[in-house]
Image (cartoon, rainbow, N blue to C red):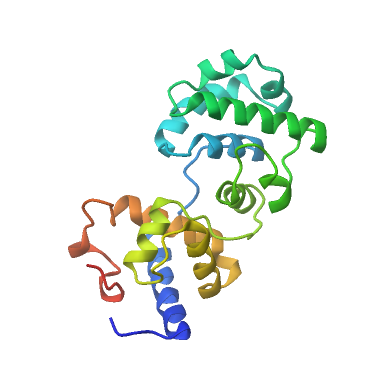
Length: 214
């Protein structure tokens, strides 16, 4: 693919997103949740873990713990046991409890609706905050860059960056803010269903005419 200007790259990405929107019209966050708190907890648990595994664990977890105060007051060993099927469960249990104590003490048990408020919580970085803001509150704060978004951004020739923060900056500059949350969903869904890490199905990929990979 010839060298592109910023405008050309933005237009190509727009074509890519239009195709993905037609393929995945129901694309959404696949972490099951009913409330902002549930999404916050699920996203903390999802670090280095599949959404499928998180959803298995949270099915019972969310029936037991229904408020920030419940997590804050739980004996830590009991909370650890509830999520022990998740990798790094001890540190994640500590982060969830610490974050929920902050929610109770500083926000009346409610999840804050700002990047600054969320990233001040234990275990919450920019990616987690973007997930919560975009999917729980409909606030387009940025682009969620997980392993799928990072991989596809590189393969599609959108950036050469590998750092998630730098990748996010590139994508934000290329896409209208109204599509930031959906951009992540579309790339994640395509990464899971077509453009796998080890065996991308390039022969059947709907984006093959717009993609320089391999």
